[in-house]
Length: 200
Figure (cartoon, one colour):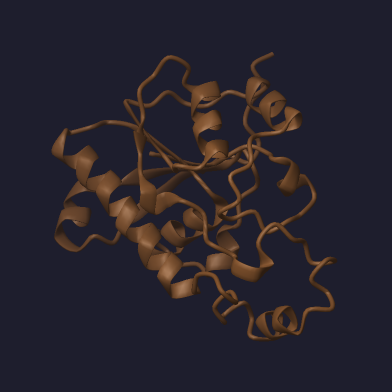
């Protein structure tokens, strides 16, 4: 199963907190996908946000895919579509930083609510694949969602922030069917794909 973060948007290039803002891929983001190779997949699952849908269509043209609402990005609330420079004088932002990013986003989503929403969505994906005896799948979503999944399920365990993934990159994981059915808890990392071989 490929867990892939969508390609670049303008907000990503400007280091903004792009959550529920439904912006499209930028030219650099489109170009990046066209210059890199991604493994094929029997089933494709996508966040409902436009940047993920566009990424899926560029990598897997003319293929059907499943929209998974729970795999949408976090709602960053008052920090939405702003970067750290624009938030530097915001006392709520400083409190959030001082908490180690543990506090909920003001007027947005809490870390735990986002985490559990992501995991519900991923369980839908895995259930669908197991029921159909799928041999491969791709999940095109957001960086934080991938970090939630990796932190929860991958063995050996690593901290959430250790699973950071860049745009257009991700992880290729192997799901152990018997372990998953027994306790829903183990994936094995086959490969990380931060440096995907060029098509050329």
